[in-house]
Length: 594
Image 1 (spheres, one colour):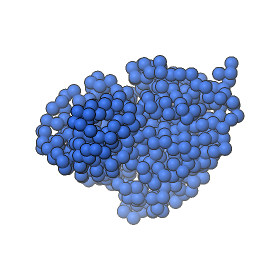
Image 2 (cartoon, helix red, strand yellow):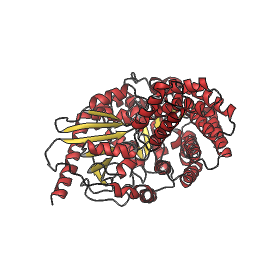
Image 3 (cartoon, rainbow, N blue to C red):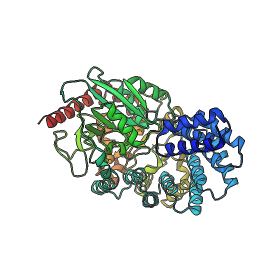
Image 4 (tube, rainbow, N blue to C red):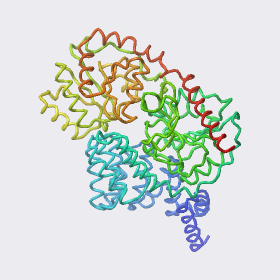
């Protein structure tokens, strides 16, 4: 192959690559390498392609060859760093970013990626500094504004985070960047359900409605009794909250009535991934697939009901749902809200998340949701016993002489109103301590300064960083009473606390998301731990903290209450969902048969 032919083949491969024709690009790249194994540009491009496919080991090998052949190429060091970061080899990734920046100090993308690595290490101040360095070089780098918003959110600086998300969306009209703002709104106490809905409707008009022209009629066989094809779409088929709630549900699906497809964007599979894979009749990796390609794949699979498990959380595939590849589309699980999509037919809820709706589930469209709400009859959640949890320990107050409160939720949920309420509680409960979960950073000092200003010894407030699951569960043995943040309470963390014998005090607000604690505690038989106002929240938590015999009694039986509750009735929950699917399907059949 002559140099001219190599150049022509490489140019054609690059055009295929840029157009999303990945297999065609890969074939041409390999053709070049079969004759010229050290063609550095091709090694670099096929490394990018391997990373796009989620093939981290191959991409790392290819990029390592590139930087060995050309060690002064900052872009190659940056890409190697990104792939190492994908593989969670964070220290090695930082080394590559630093090499890239030593070669090009004004490399904004490398500063941005270094920030991502620091954030994963929970070095939040360092991450903030890296993102700001990126923006000092390139003020128009939308990804750096969005990522800065993410880390500011991690520190509880929600107003600043929302400003960053707004700016990022102005610079780069991207549905996922704009969706970061929508998700963060649920954390902010100043946004009510109608404001949240209005922002989601605007997002739909900007990013989803233009895709309506791509929607084709569905020719699924309209038989009300046939076996249905159900598709689940998620990047989180792992041991994170979504994956953990899915296991007891998917493992109890009725495969005689439903054929289960999972469309996975999971780049780092784990044991939970394999458990979920075993629950599926068909498992498809969608890593590297464009939204358009994924939508076409789902349509080719003739899915009858397609479930989004992410909403506007990270790495969502809502642009796929905007293309309506299935006749029925449902949102569920990541958090209980709206997607804003006109093409999303239903959302799952329960009687506690949406008590204002009619007692007839799905009886009508609610003005704060774009979807028709289907209230599952008992619970939104399906919790499985975590293997890493270990036994329940005794109430720590019995041995140390004072009560320890704790909140192991993401610190992004801890806003000034929450801190003010907790300060009042700690003043009311003499000698009490508080354990919080957060990455390293100056925001910890600000929290200590706040409590000092409230005449509370800051030594009574201590932080823990992210821990492996077994150590995370062990922290609950140090906590007497769990404190839910608001307006975005815990889901997994509340269930985990109860499983470890720790009662949780929650505050139910105006949004569905804010009533997550109400849903869980009501299902486990503890609705009396749910407050309606901050004053009531303080009163309930203080009374619980002042009654050691009650704490001890609750701790001894909470796990049994969980096991006997709808929260852990996997077969019953699956029947409820399966019944809802059949109800949706019959409604569609009736509509198309008219």
